[in-house]
Length: 185
Image (cartoon, rainbow, N blue to C red; front, side, top):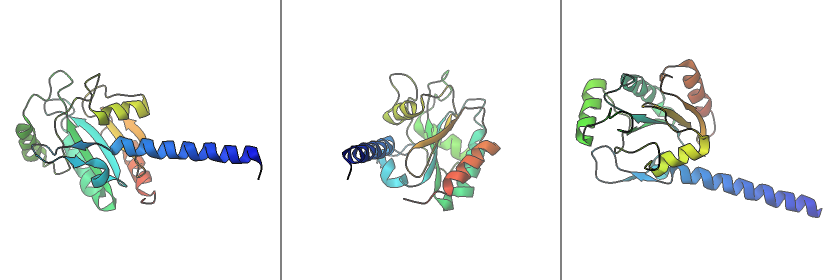
């Protein structure tokens, strides 16, 4: 075989391995369920699924999006989809409650059953590892509550949507449905 061909193939294999490693690191983190004790390893629990990762807040103008996020969860969960909520108080103190208070509010007010995790920081130097990875892979950190990152079955970010994009926005729904058609790994 041609030496240049072999070098090129080696370079392509290195790039493929690096891309796979990046995908693994995005979800290779653990977070406690909201008001829970035992951390969940996201890659073990949700690897191979299409995910919508959302930073949430209970006292925000976008808070009614909880209802739409739950509707997405109910509609697509059987196809390998999950909404993962991460409460954050990073924007004007709009999530001041304890984890138990947040859980009660989400459940009683909006009937939230999709997985909610511990209260985290999503912006700046105090951002959690997941949100640092999301920012690094997209160049975009949340500008406000209810920013949405869509993760494909391969563990890579395929799109992100600002707060104003509702869960039922046709562009977001089409992106979810497109990713659900991808083969499971």
